[in-house]
Image (cartoon, rainbow over all chains, first blue to last red; front, top):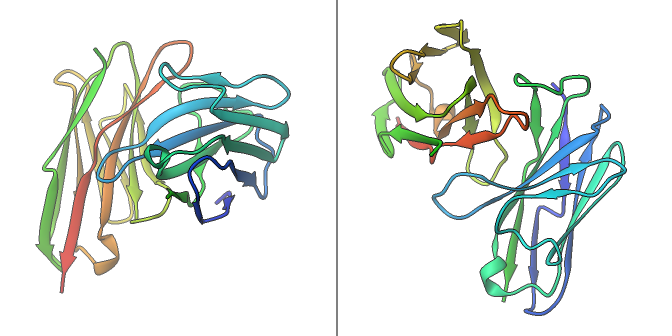
Amino acid sequence: GAVVSQHPSRVICKSGTSVKIECRSLDFQATTMFWYRQFPKQSLMLMATSNEGSKATYEQGVEKDKFLINHASLTLSTLTVTSAHPEDSSFYICSARYPLQEGPTDTQYFGPGTRLTVL
Amino acid sequence: KNQVEQSPQSLIILEGKNCTLQCNYTVSPFSNLRWYKQDTGRGPVSLTIMTFSENTKSNGRYTATLDADTKQSSLHITASQLSDSASYICVVSAGDSNYQLIWGAGTKLIIKP
């Protein structure tokens, strides 16, 4: 199946610093990627939808100035957590929609996730 | 309000046994229902996806059922293996223009030898 990678797999940073997480579709081009956040023992929560070449669409309650998303190419989307605080500590997962499958039964491939710990 | 509820929250069974996980949803309009397997610290992997007209779909030892009338789905795992230990998440796609995915909280399954 298609492969989506994330880098780094885990990061520990100090409060107030910014952290960038990369999401890459390795063997297909994805015009649409999604960013999720998952807290312990909870399910995934969609943060934003990232479209190549245009601004990301953020879900209600997600601060766009804090979680900067850049989808500069068809294989790369980045999420930057700016001025991170301990409450931003979470598991961040991206997914990429398989091309030409925009629609209700689209196939999304998920990355392995990035564990962010803010001290 | 669109919701997906799963039961049980957690389940422990012995290797080789069968089990069934439940999913109830109140999502309207309904488009499709998906089951994902998520290993600890990893991203979800798709197991099955069923549209309104499908009432059963298999993927190896995994069999999902869908009753669109009662808005219930189940995931049956046969002859469980240690590698089946994971969280199983039921996800319903709303039939709106955004194809919004409504995620359940998951069932944590532990297989013991």
